[in-house]
Image (tube, rainbow, N blue to C red; front, top):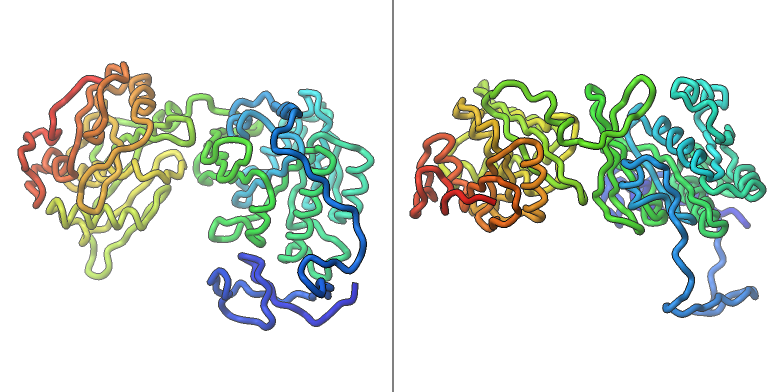
Amino acid sequence: MARNAPIFVCAECGAVHARWAGRCDSCGAWNAVHEEAGVAASLPKSVGVAHGKGRAATLVSLEGEEPAPPRLSAAVEELDRVLGGGLVPASAVLVGGDPGIGKSTLLLQAAAAFARQGAKCVYVSGEEATAQIRMRASRLGLQNAPVSLSAETDLNAILAMLEAEKPAVVVVDSIQTMWLDSVDSAPGSVSQVRAAAHALTAFAKRRGAAVILVGHVTKEGQIAGPRVVEHMVDTVLYFEGERGHPFRILRAVKNRFGPAAEIGVFEMTGKGLAQVGNPSALFLSERGREVPGAAVFAGVEGTRPVLVEIQALVAPSPPGSPRRAVVGWDSSRLAMILAVLEARCGVALSGNDIYLNVAGGLRVGEPAADLAVAAALLSAAGGDPLPAEAVFFGEISLSGAVRPAPQADTRLREAARLGFNVAFAPSQVKPGANSGMTVRRIEHLSALAEMALGVDGPAAGSGKDRTGTGRGDERA
């Protein structure tokens, strides 16, 4: 094809611009437009009319008789859970995560697990030599796994090898190192990443192989390259974790073949990643004596209940702007909770330094954590520890009302299984879960503030008793 003048492409959304701009007109990202060499493309002269002849596309009915292809199980429960029950043939999976978090270790272990289940696996690395991969496999005890290795970055050579070998599972580490000679730009650029992802996804659909792609992430934690790559693949997984903790979370943010927001929990050990079957017990294993500012949140990640400790510290602030430090939660939501506590409950914390941490390195995103965060803040401000046998869950509205949280029965059963016997929950939670839990139903946040601090806020009272339960305690 004839080459034309350079074009300017947005690294965030892939939009093409005629000239450089500091801000992308399509997605609004700043400093994301980069120059690339363009390729002239001939367009049809009229809608629906092509220049050349080609085969006609085939049509099939929606009501088909073909059975769904069987999933490939890795015999690793945590990985199969995130994938929705196993790896689907002819699918493309994109895995992203911070540098050094363990993506290559996870996928080498996964490739070995699939190979040991009888699937033909090929591991292609553009970042390591085969000798380096063998060293890591030996350290992980995988040196005898029937996995074929290749250290190559030329995508044409890789595709030719895959066409000849016909593997069932392909791991490409990473998509940013692959390059096509037909695209006139450097490896890792928007055009190269988009073209490489398209070629590998097309191979997966054409040959029925499951292709797993590793993607680098930006400093904001998003997968580098155009967002069209995430739309192109079938499943997007993020590998998360804190450097100071051995726990790693594999989270599905997109899955066409299973539930999204599902998580798998692993522990990084000297011999690789070990799956954790009971993450709630793991996240709560380091709980010490009762201290102010610690509340246990009964959460749900995907279909799995997870209990985690939320820690808060309220300290006097020096003159100037108070400090806000949040780890594992949304900082803007913390600001909202602080505003509701001050405006609706009469608890002024805005002039203090606020520190909030989700123990264990888990990132909590569901609004049901609001009540646990508020309880931790009130406990830290008052200096009194919360009951050790209690869990908290419920969403807080701007009016201070505690809104219902989904899957309340699942949360209560998991809490009871781990030895908790009291739950502070929204008033809509009904008995009948047969969990043996005592549910202290909270209608308004002021009731919780009154119980924790003895504060009669603007919305406190209204017929509520001094325990702050609103409707009293009930057995679930």
